Image (tube, rainbow, N blue to C red; front, side, top):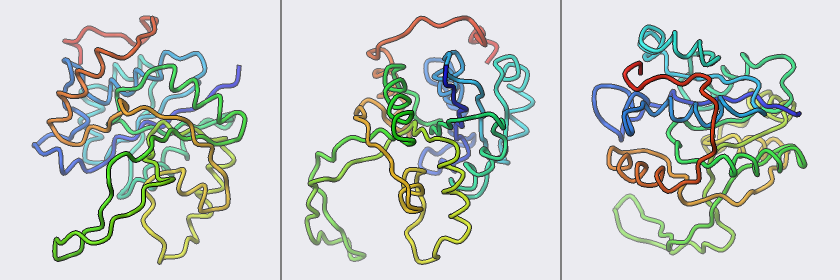
Length: 247
């Protein structure tokens, strides 16, 4: 069986979420968000390695409070960087030498069905790289610095990108090598599909799902809780499972 290594990114600032503690420690149905994100992958037969990339400011807390449990789950901890692409680069450096595919997933996306990951991985194995997308359905407006609505942007052919995004390792590594000499006037790098396409690669678009929301504010926790209850669930082994009190 072809297997992948997984980078779960939990190193963002989470400023819009608010609060003293980082967003990744927020609880959804009594489990921290980072754990719910990890559980999407740790019990999959096609996952050989799972790496949790956390902000340096959260690393000590993660190790002291959750390190033993994460070790039991087989999860490696890696310190992230200032920007998302720095965190991915740090995670890539920790990938096993024999890893053929790499999945990159935002820890703030916990509402993901196993079948969706299956479809993305299958597409990546065919083309080398795949990412889930959903069409833009709302009317798009460009707003100026004066807060006045300007032009309406045609939404034909526009899609919103989601994660997990899965790549043949060599493709993602090549993109990050190219990043070192990326022109400074380019737009900020906000996901890995962008980096791969900018560096000359091709990424297959896989049909995403609107339920795969990214938790950005505390209000999103309520929505995510409702979505989780409605998602199809696969039976999983007890590997890495703990009582809620242990988390």
